[in-house]
Image (cartoon, rainbow, N blue to C red; front, side, top):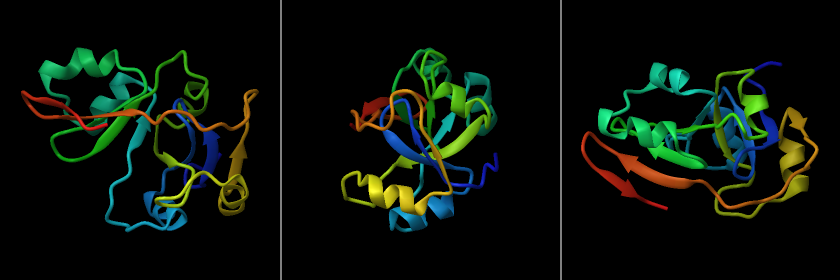
Length: 147
């Protein structure tokens, strides 16, 4: 599988787009290319290759479930737990940009999403919208819930 392809996949939280190419995702979602897109990672070790996790928050991040963290330099990551069905997909790539499968500020439209992706990955549960991940902002000492 080409990691630069855009995948339509059921993530650990909701149906989403995943790709190694964040600019393609921005175009598909019709949002500014400057707007940062979160990355999903397969392990805590992989996460540490991309960002420095403040010591005070390492345990919280390692044990988090369905949570996205914005780190001190403004990058955001979600660690996928091994018991998630999405883990089997993400472990093939280690890290991918990920976003909900919809145009910016619009609801999920299966017909639209299937027309703009390169690869459709359907598991036994099919596609369904679910609660988005919790969103937290971390810095060296503080922890703030944003969503």
